[in-house]
Length: 58
Image 1 (cartoon, rainbow, N blue to C red):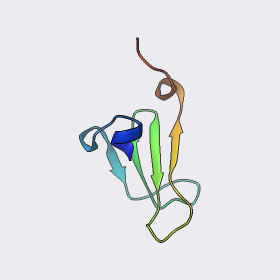
Image 2: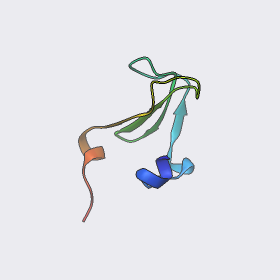
Image 3: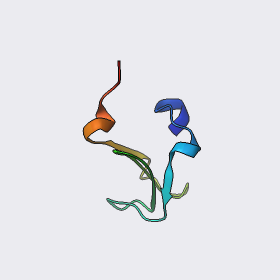
Image 4: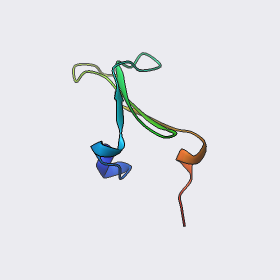
């Protein structure tokens, strides 16, 4: 999902075994955080972009 929507590959991301807002883990790239939960949860996935993570380059 991260590669398809954001265009980042796993080599770009840092995995943290803790998350925010009740999520169990997250992937981080600069100012982009992708919060994840176990498949059995109905919480879904949260993509949080701040600062330069919201901007595109020309």
